[in-house]
Amino acid sequence: MQKPDLKEAQKRSKKKPKIITDFIIDENLINLGLSKKYFVKTYGCQMNEHDSEKIKAMLEKMNYQATSNMEEADVIVLNSCSIRENAHNKVFGMIGQLKKLKDKNEDLILVLCGCMAQEEIVVAKILEKYYWLDIVFGTHNINNFPNLLGQKIFAKKQQIEVFSKEGEIYEGLPIKRKFPHKAWVNIMLGCDKFCAYCIVPYTRGKQRSRKRKYILNEIKDLIANGCQEITLLGQNVNAYGKDLADNYYFADLLNDIGKLNMPRVRFMTNHPWDFNDEIIFAIQKNKNIMPHIHLPLQSGSDQVLQKMNRGYCQEEYIALYFKLKKAIPNICISTDIIVGFPTESEEDFQETLKVVNKCQFDYAFTFIYSKRVGTPAAKLEDKIPLAEKEKRLQKLNKYISSYALESNQRFKSKEVKVLVDGFSEKNKQVLTGYSEHMKRVNFYGAEELIGRIVLVKITDVKTWSLFGVLSDEWC
Ligand code: SF4
Image 1 (tube, rainbow, N blue to C red):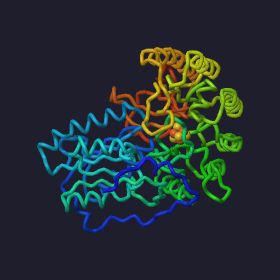
Image 2 (cartoon, helix red, strand yellow):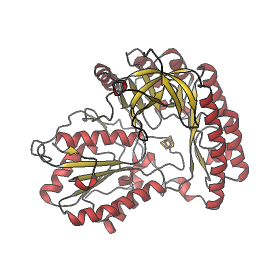
Image 3 (cartoon, helix red, strand yellow):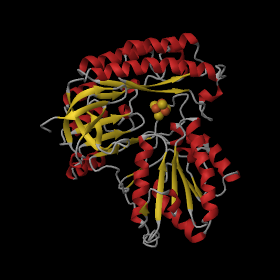
Image 4 (cartoon, helix red, strand yellow):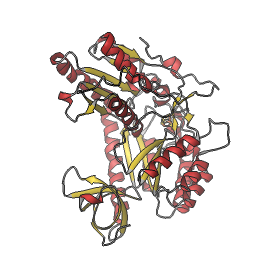
């Protein structure tokens, strides 16, 4: 049994990460899943979604088949998120529900992985209360999942293997992508920013940038297979390359990717502190980089930003925001905002509203601060009552929605290029996809358009989506 250790997880050394390229599944494990089914439930961010794509591919290499019905699965994987308390609660609620399935079928294998598995308190709770989980592994050893599954099945013993280390880089893991026409491409792992409220540097390890040759080859393969859009993923993509000793940074990577024949390139997420002019020039220069940037603000108050250890002040954020607006005409900028950070006074909150009213974001993800055990912010005294935090959130959301609607209105009667993802969940005759500016666009159309970039004329505008009609010509 290997349990997580928070103190170990926050250590950073100058050691270069190992690059491990020899992923293979032992031949004794290949047929483990014959006539068996798996179900993977993913919580949290795109990084987790992408990890689930690797977990699914490993299971399929072992001949398991996917099912969308959890009750008929032989292996259930919960890929968890620890960014907020409610994500924790949802996962523990689900583990509780799964006990009933386990009681009916003792051969059912229940797996917990992802960021929650990296937390000391979570693993302690599992050992004490949620003993029916069969396998727990963390973010540093996804590659070992097939072996852990094999050991559980053959030795009939609970497997807990969570490493608290800086982390390696695994190349060549299989991936079962959700869409053939769009893909996530990890360019880096981990984070060294240590924002005071954030657990990610502990759960995902040290910043490790992938070598450019692996990234570019992955993108070339995607192009050869007809992919239309990639999103470069990392906790802070703007810091790409700062841990490599070859003077090759995010702007260089964008310029190299820009030369490839990938119709759409996106990236997320960004950190204002590392967003330099070279990156702005690369976005300007490469026409396949989409005009949408997610630029987390978190707070508009200098006092709170400092306590959050964000490394920028209100003035610097606003200057960067308008530099981007000026450099890239019509760019959409979205953001993340936390309200109710322990030291946030009413005046601090007003500073956040001031920035929101000045920047008028295209959209924003807004949250009430959630205490994460082990982070520096968890030690701050939190005197703000929950009702006050909720009031601030509601007030903030009113502004955010009105600016989102205003932002969408500028597309009324315009033609936008939409990459079609599929039919809408709500109406199976309506196709849905995203415009270049990352606006969700719905329109009536035929199945053959899925996976293609089409022109849609916008006829109706809502706060969070656009509606249109297919133009006669499509690109
Ligand atoms: S940049 Fe800050 S908020 Fe983002 S993952 Fe790193 S520590 Fe967390």
